[in-house]
Image (tube, rainbow, N blue to C red; front, side):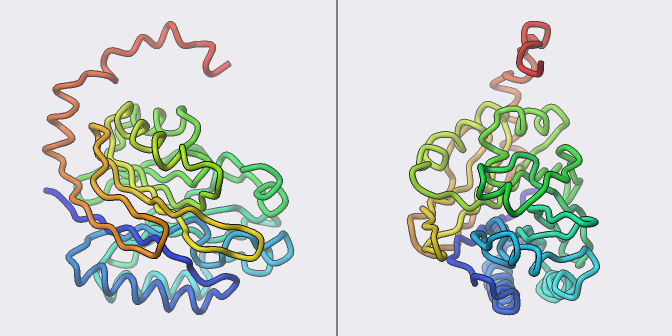
Length: 266
């Protein structure tokens, strides 16, 4: 059975978690009204990105926090699954994380960014990820990556080999990396025969600009929906029959020769 996926490209609410939760509620309501089953939002949606280490720690949430409980309530009330980024308190460290909450309000996954981007990420966050787990939902196998993660081919390939059908990518892509949105995301979808939802920020925060250009790509590399540089909601259908036909026609994963690739992981 196919599902309808919605993606919110937004300027967000910088360092305003209460405002971000209000925005989440409004976007979830509108996406559900448009028939969406799942809504994907950007990296660090609940906090803003360019926070600096002290503010990132101050805004970091434990999994049992009231803010995440409200997000669960929003999912349950609107009857829509949600995926969004937030700074997470993990012991004494702060991780760049994303939550996947199902339409009943259950937390199905908290994914932690595995590849930190330059000093910007490393000054604020620690690597606390446990690989690239998948979640079974509505007949699909879902994985999550965050921004820079998807720029490493191994990330999507590991999930594809484990059976992923759809990879959700909350992101915060800045100039001059237009090539990621323009070329790399459709290529990742094609080479791994998965759907990819790439949810970027747009507009500006103190010290950073974002390019937008969010997209939803199909397993044949087709761009099913693409945003420009302004706040936008995208909608696309995720179709298991199309997945199966693409994989039957193009046997990319089956034709791999792993014995030749040992140097990649060494």
